[in-house]
Length: 167
Image (cartoon, rainbow, N blue to C red; front, side, top):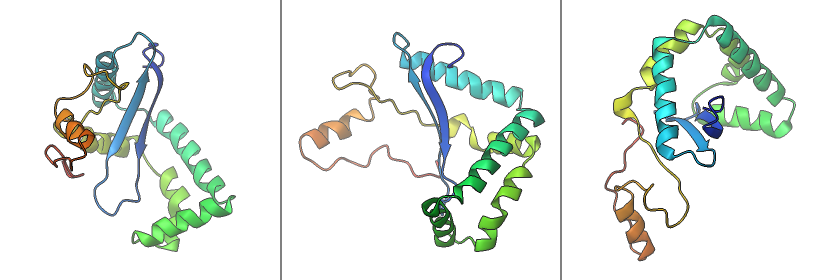
Protein backbone atom coordinates (compact mmCIF):
# COMPACT_ATOMS: atom_id res chain seq x y z
CA UNK A 1 0.00 0.00 0.00
CA UNK A 2 2.83 2.39 0.76
CA UNK A 3 4.67 1.29 -2.39
CA UNK A 4 1.44 1.84 -4.33
CA UNK A 5 1.26 5.34 -2.79
CA UNK A 6 -2.15 4.57 -1.25
CA UNK A 7 -1.16 4.73 2.41
CA UNK A 8 0.85 7.25 4.37
CA UNK A 9 1.48 4.50 6.92
CA UNK A 10 0.49 0.89 7.45
CA UNK A 11 1.29 -1.84 9.91
CA UNK A 12 0.08 -4.68 12.06
CA UNK A 13 -0.23 -5.39 15.76
CA UNK A 14 -0.70 -8.46 17.91
CA UNK A 15 -0.49 -8.78 21.68
CA UNK A 16 0.75 -12.27 22.44
CA UNK A 17 0.42 -11.86 26.19
CA UNK A 18 -3.37 -12.22 26.28
CA UNK A 19 -4.79 -14.91 28.50
CA UNK A 20 -7.42 -15.80 25.92
CA UNK A 21 -7.71 -15.43 22.16
CA UNK A 22 -6.47 -12.05 21.01
CA UNK A 23 -6.91 -10.03 17.87
CA UNK A 24 -4.44 -9.44 15.08
CA UNK A 25 -4.84 -5.88 13.86
CA UNK A 26 -3.88 -4.45 10.51
CA UNK A 27 -4.05 -0.70 10.11
CA UNK A 28 -3.45 1.83 7.38
CA UNK A 29 -3.78 5.60 7.03
CA UNK A 30 -4.74 6.76 3.54
CA UNK A 31 -2.80 9.42 1.74
CA UNK A 32 -4.72 12.55 0.73
CA UNK A 33 -7.15 11.75 -2.06
CA UNK A 34 -7.27 8.00 -1.30
CA UNK A 35 -10.56 6.62 0.00
CA UNK A 36 -11.00 4.21 2.88
CA UNK A 37 -12.54 1.78 0.38
CA UNK A 38 -9.31 1.83 -1.66
CA UNK A 39 -7.25 1.13 1.47
CA UNK A 40 -9.55 -1.71 2.51
CA UNK A 41 -9.35 -3.25 -0.98
CA UNK A 42 -5.54 -3.02 -0.92
CA UNK A 43 -5.34 -4.72 2.51
CA UNK A 44 -7.65 -7.52 1.33
CA UNK A 45 -5.56 -7.94 -1.84
CA UNK A 46 -2.38 -8.22 0.21
CA UNK A 47 -3.94 -10.87 2.46
CA UNK A 48 -5.10 -12.80 -0.61
CA UNK A 49 -1.57 -12.56 -2.06
CA UNK A 50 -0.14 -13.87 1.19
CA UNK A 51 -2.49 -16.87 1.04
CA UNK A 52 -1.47 -17.66 -2.54
CA UNK A 53 2.23 -16.81 -2.24
CA UNK A 54 3.42 -17.34 1.34
CA UNK A 55 6.44 -15.44 2.55
CA UNK A 56 9.84 -16.91 1.85
CA UNK A 57 12.39 -18.33 4.27
CA UNK A 58 14.52 -15.23 3.57
CA UNK A 59 11.68 -12.91 4.64
CA UNK A 60 11.13 -14.95 7.79
CA UNK A 61 14.86 -14.91 8.56
CA UNK A 62 14.99 -11.12 8.15
CA UNK A 63 11.97 -10.66 10.43
CA UNK A 64 13.19 -13.10 13.07
CA UNK A 65 16.60 -11.36 13.19
CA UNK A 66 14.85 -8.06 13.84
CA UNK A 67 12.53 -9.55 16.49
CA UNK A 68 15.36 -11.38 18.23
CA UNK A 69 17.32 -8.13 18.32
CA UNK A 70 14.33 -6.31 19.82
CA UNK A 71 13.87 -9.04 22.45
CA UNK A 72 17.55 -8.96 23.42
CA UNK A 73 17.84 -5.15 23.46
CA UNK A 74 14.62 -4.84 25.48
CA UNK A 75 16.62 -6.25 28.38
CA UNK A 76 18.95 -3.25 28.23
CA UNK A 77 16.19 -1.09 29.66
CA UNK A 78 15.26 -1.82 33.24
CA UNK A 79 11.61 -0.90 32.65
CA UNK A 80 11.33 -3.05 29.49
CA UNK A 81 12.97 -6.05 31.15
CA UNK A 82 10.76 -5.80 34.22
CA UNK A 83 7.66 -5.36 32.05
CA UNK A 84 8.56 -8.43 29.95
CA UNK A 85 8.99 -10.62 33.00
CA UNK A 86 5.95 -9.15 34.76
CA UNK A 87 3.62 -9.70 31.81
CA UNK A 88 4.92 -13.23 31.33
CA UNK A 89 4.53 -14.19 34.98
CA UNK A 90 1.08 -12.58 35.21
CA UNK A 91 -0.14 -14.59 32.21
CA UNK A 92 1.08 -18.02 33.26
CA UNK A 93 4.50 -18.09 31.69
CA UNK A 94 7.77 -18.63 33.52
CA UNK A 95 11.15 -16.92 33.77
CA UNK A 96 12.51 -19.73 31.59
CA UNK A 97 9.90 -18.89 28.94
CA UNK A 98 11.12 -15.28 28.86
CA UNK A 99 14.75 -16.36 28.72
CA UNK A 100 13.99 -18.75 25.83
CA UNK A 101 12.03 -16.15 23.84
CA UNK A 102 14.88 -15.10 21.49
CA UNK A 103 15.68 -18.74 20.62
CA UNK A 104 12.00 -19.53 20.06
CA UNK A 105 11.65 -16.53 17.73
CA UNK A 106 14.77 -17.56 15.80
CA UNK A 107 13.38 -21.07 15.28
CA UNK A 108 10.21 -19.92 13.46
CA UNK A 109 9.93 -21.29 9.91
CA UNK A 110 8.13 -20.02 6.81
CA UNK A 111 5.85 -23.07 7.00
CA UNK A 112 4.81 -22.13 10.55
CA UNK A 113 4.11 -18.55 9.42
CA UNK A 114 1.99 -19.90 6.55
CA UNK A 115 -0.01 -22.09 8.95
CA UNK A 116 -0.50 -19.22 11.39
CA UNK A 117 -1.61 -16.87 8.60
CA UNK A 118 -4.16 -19.43 7.38
CA UNK A 119 -5.51 -19.74 10.92
CA UNK A 120 -5.66 -16.00 11.66
CA UNK A 121 -6.57 -14.36 8.34
CA UNK A 122 -10.05 -15.75 7.82
CA UNK A 123 -12.50 -13.38 6.11
CA UNK A 124 -15.48 -14.72 8.04
CA UNK A 125 -13.87 -13.51 11.29
CA UNK A 126 -12.70 -10.16 9.96
CA UNK A 127 -14.00 -6.87 11.31
CA UNK A 128 -13.22 -3.52 9.72
CA UNK A 129 -13.28 -0.31 11.71
CA UNK A 130 -12.98 3.12 10.20
CA UNK A 131 -11.91 6.30 11.92
CA UNK A 132 -13.01 9.39 10.08
CA UNK A 133 -13.18 13.11 10.83
CA UNK A 134 -16.07 14.32 12.98
CA UNK A 135 -19.17 14.89 10.89
CA UNK A 136 -18.07 12.56 8.08
CA UNK A 137 -21.05 10.22 8.21
CA UNK A 138 -20.32 8.70 4.80
CA UNK A 139 -17.43 6.67 6.24
CA UNK A 140 -19.20 5.54 9.43
CA UNK A 141 -20.44 1.97 9.62
CA UNK A 142 -24.23 1.77 10.21
CA UNK A 143 -23.82 -0.57 13.22
CA UNK A 144 -21.75 2.10 15.00
CA UNK A 145 -24.20 4.95 14.50
CA UNK A 146 -26.88 3.88 17.05
CA UNK A 147 -24.32 3.44 19.84
CA UNK A 148 -22.68 6.76 18.99
CA UNK A 149 -26.06 8.50 18.99
CA UNK A 150 -26.96 6.99 22.37
CA UNK A 151 -23.60 8.04 23.81
CA UNK A 152 -24.06 11.58 22.46
CA UNK A 153 -27.43 11.77 24.26
CA UNK A 154 -25.75 10.62 27.47
CA UNK A 155 -27.34 7.18 27.38
CA UNK A 156 -25.55 3.90 27.88
CA UNK A 157 -24.74 2.51 24.41
CA UNK A 158 -26.26 -0.86 23.60
CA UNK A 159 -24.02 -3.90 23.29
CA UNK A 160 -25.54 -4.81 19.92
CA UNK A 161 -22.87 -5.68 17.41
CA UNK A 162 -20.08 -6.27 19.91
CA UNK A 163 -18.05 -9.40 19.45
CA UNK A 164 -15.54 -11.19 21.62
CA UNK A 165 -12.11 -12.27 20.48
CA UNK A 166 -13.42 -15.70 19.49
CA UNK A 167 -15.39 -14.20 16.57
